[in-house]
Length: 129
Length: 338
Image (tube, rainbow over all chains, first blue to last red; front, side):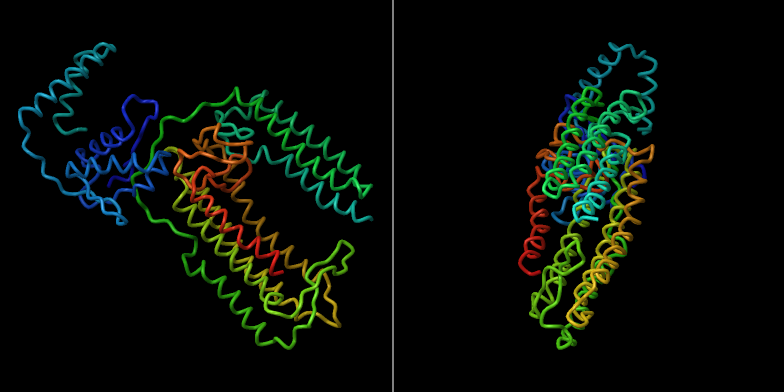
């Protein structure tokens, strides 16, 4: 685990907090900031540090466990698993394109030039998350 | 010097000094228990609030000192000073509220799981029980040397006004209470380690870690010093000569105990006053009367105080009530045993 690995949430965001935790952790997992074998804070520890309900953190960990990223053992902490990426199907690609279009439209509406968007996408494609 | 004037000097004046100083002994992110921007305390408005509060505190202190010449008015004057200062604090808190920084909605936490424990580990935590047990064994071995009746309380004149008998609770009562208080303090230490946040954001986690460490050191020193003090006090019946025991022989170790505690309180206060000391991230509305934290939405058992130093319970959490109960047991037993 990188020493600066951290999680950030915004209680005012329209995205539910458990979803924010899932998104944030998945980003770290894909980027390699969290490696297989790393131990994450317990549900209790993370809930107390973030000042949110235990169930919110437990939900987030459970979602990532269902995706095959984490192993959650009661009383033994949460461990990052080695995970093979499954073969993406047509539906995954279509959902990705839909969300990407929505996101690009949103940031272009906010004034971000197409060149900047292309540069960011190219960096992401190279794995520079 | 009358007893009432003596009380005035050793109670009213130190209380006034503490009340005068307490508002500035706080994290930079708080002013009179309200979360503010770190530079607010330096503003002219903040200084005006502090000045108004201090004027009330010292006016009440002068009234209490004047009343101390009449023993009948003394108790009322001390209460007036305490409750009057509390009212002044709450009024000033209300004045500060419009300048609140607002709730902290963006939070972050480190994903590192570095193990933390009590300073010195569990061997250091259990050793005070050894001191108390050794004292009990020594008393058992010297049972015949303990007078049938010995003083346990002294009046302001220095004369004993309460005695205990040579039975199991008269002799071992103090040790039992010390053991129970040690258990309560160790449980508190574990609650700080496991049940308090490591900081509302990653940026303030390093400060919080140092604050927590200084508090745990103070807690461990208190446990050790308490075992030593209560061990000595329980041996005091063996110091009785001709049916008498000087109060100064008992007061000297009490004074040493307090001096040792103050020595370790100081670093905690210094850490609180550091320019980088942040807001705690808890909502202002959850601080009842500015001092009592009640937040059922916060899973923390124990949180850093907003006013003064150290930690306080989150009374919105049921576990905190159980912890308060652990402290209540030795207090209740003290009335019965000693």
